[in-house]
Length: 167
Image 1 (cartoon, rainbow, N blue to C red):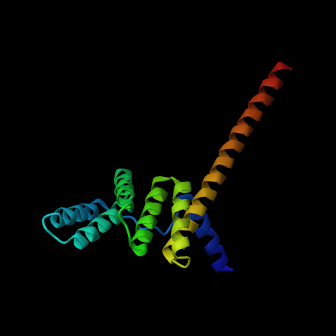
Image 2: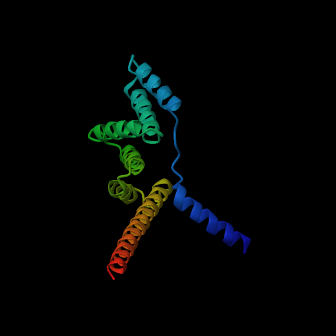
Image 3: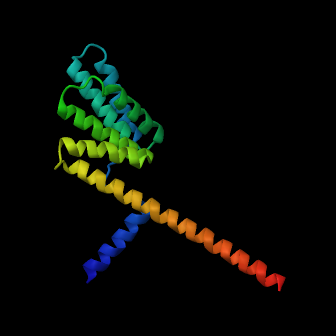
């Protein structure tokens, strides 16, 4: 019984706090990745540069700062055209889905994560992200319904008060 009550409170807490499993990244990690990319530009192999850019893209879309998330999305979108490896394409599309999720564009994020799942149906990260997206969409729907119900209640109360004064 205690386990069920604990699960209930965890669910309610996650509803109000977001409670997703997407890791976040601080500015110092982003800065470290930016330094790594700058150093790689000074004569490293193309493969090493690409790895550094992927790490920076990961850090940006997982950043706590929205400006970084938007920068990560732009970097990933710009890099999609030259990808030939299905694995690399899947990883970049997944990171784009994370970026759009973090920026609040849940429909775009869901499209991209479903594209990942077409490439790899059992990919746990993509399955987890898809669940987080769906949970967030439900949460936003509940909040919207709550706002509409409150507005309706206030309007009905205002009308009732206005009619009772006329009599």
